[in-house]
Amino acid sequence: MALAIGDPAPLFTLPDQEGQPVDLASFLGKRVVIYFYPKDDTPGCTKEACNFRDRWSTLREQGIVVLGISKDDAKSHAKFMAKYELPFTLLTDAEPCPVASAYESYGLKKFMGREYMGMMRHTFVIDPEGRIERIYLKVKAETMADDILKDLGLA
Image (cartoon, rainbow, N blue to C red):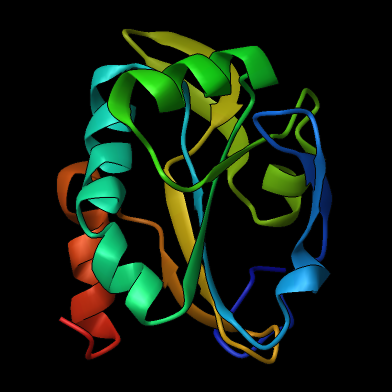
């Protein structure tokens, strides 16, 4: 069954870039952007992360929490964050990617005729009550943060 706007957001606890657990339930009362991305420091993922970084002051002023999720480990996340001065949290959803699976953001992908299981570039906005407010399955990496702010009437 596909997730839909208005559904309760699947809860999770994942380690951040320092290996510390981050629990989605701890953000109740705040709007949360969860964006799933394939891999740290790759062209599309870097564009997406830098767009969130470049819109950080507006996101923060609006009380929006940003959580990026990939399969990369804490060390990779920390290096990626330092290289691009990312001010938000990155989380590790290790194989078999249970959180991405719960958000229907992990599955069969195709690249150059090869099929493999991987993280999909999807974004979810969770409202302060913990319900899915927006779902982005067709993500433009370089404008994702801009698109969210515009769609929420905050741009």
